[in-house]
Image (cartoon, rainbow, N blue to C red; front, side):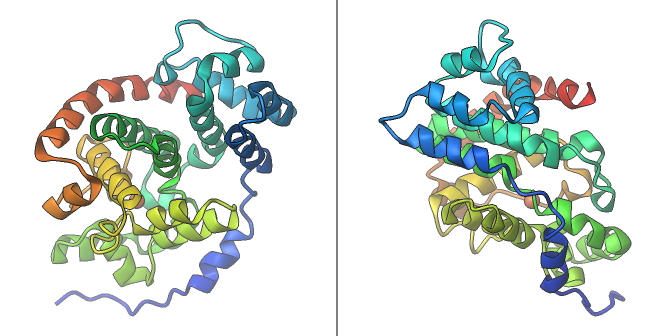
Length: 290
Ligand SMILES: [Fe+2]
C-alpha cells in the first residue's frame, strides 16, 4: 500500500502563478503573421523584431549554430533572415524567444539550467528528422510545438519540488510515468499547465492541444500533430537528452506510430539519424553557458 497524501492542489494556484510570467514577445507573433502574408517581404520581419535586442541576439546565436546549417557566420539580423528562408526563420524566431524561459534551473524537477533547453531543442531537432522521413508537411508548427512542449514545467516546478518524493515513489511503485504520478500527487501535470500558458500567449489551438496531449496515450493519438510531438518527445527521452527526473517509463506504442503515420522502419531510421542530429543539438549548450 502506498502512503500518498490526498491531492490538495488546484489549477487556480497554477493560473495565479502564470500571471507572474512575462508574456511571450508579441513581436514574434507579428513576425509569424508577416511570414504568412505573401504580399510581405523578409525585410518586413526585420523591421518588426529589430528593436528587441535580446531576441535579435538569441536569433543570431541560433542562426550561427550547427542546428540551422548555414555555411557562413552572420553578425547582423538582415543577413541572417535572408539566408535562413521562410521556414527556418519561423523556427529561429520561436526558439530565440523561448530560450530565456527554457534556460532556467528547475529545482522541483531536479533539472539544471541547461537541461530543459537541451531537451526542448533536442525534441525539436528530432521532430525535424521525423517530419522529413514521414512527409509531415507542417514541420514548422511541429518544431514550435516541440520547442514549447514542456513550458508548463516552469510554472509547475514550484509545486512539484516539495512533493517530488511522493511523485517518484508513486511512479516507481505503480510503474507509472512521471506525468501520471504528477496527476496522482498534484491533481494536474505540466502538460495541462503548458497548454494554459500557450493559450495565454495566443498560440494557435492546435499547438496548445498537442502540448496538452503530449503525455496522455489516449489523447495524443487523436490527431497527427499531437502524435508527432509525443513521438519526438519520447524519442528524445529514449536518447537521454536533458530530462531530469522526468526521463523514464515512456514507451512508443503501435497506436502512436500509426497515429503519427510512422512505420516501424521509419522509427528505426529516425532514431539512427536523430543521434547524429543530437550531437549538433548538444553544441547549443554552449550558447546558454556563455
Ligand atoms: Fe513533458
